[in-house]
Length: 325
Image (cartoon, rainbow, N blue to C red; front, top):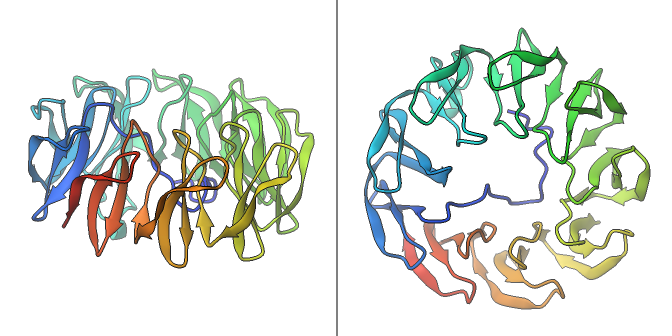
């Protein structure tokens, strides 16, 4: 869902679990600890990250396991999202695959696997700040944890709330609404990102800049692409190269990378000469470019791909889980 709004940099990843990390071995998924110890044996067709003590796993259908590997919610769903604010969006019907994504209905379950909001929506997002974006009858609105519409379905698209505002689309233009449904920034942008550190990336006339929560332009649209600000720095592309700008729009790390993501845990993954590595906030490589793919560090580890195999590295670049299929 929300593909037009999910612009968080060239590569991004939801926060990884604090205790366990999903890995694949011989075509089956399990979980390892931060030290690389196999804690839950590979047995699942697919496994996602832990959130709020539970992780979605697939065994024919999707269900959830706890950190001991015990199945707490039996596999029964065609899709299953991460838990957030105590609820998870799940889908019944339509199938789990890319080509079966249409059809079916979304609802929300609690950690006991009981429906809090019955399946009724065409699409559904994660809860944040007590609200979730849902699609009904071709329009997006926002519900509370009881399933009641707080903001009636009226938008062509809608993103998750971030820092009290959510990007929404009306009549082919994006603006922002608050949690009461009041339009805070009128729809006027070609694209819009979530707020981060008080700023949001917006695109007008084919160029990206940033606005504050009043809609005031703080960085004039001038970039080809941008990512989110983290600790005062945001990735930005000028021409064919990515660098990092500060909140004034000035490049503090000159454009030199083929791709670049937002910072996480003090480092950011960047691609140079076809390989991914990690730089610090001065632009210095801490882990040299060597990976086919790389995701953000979360809780001390980053998922990387090398030679078609997936593994995890720590902050020194050492593999704690060697790449495996």
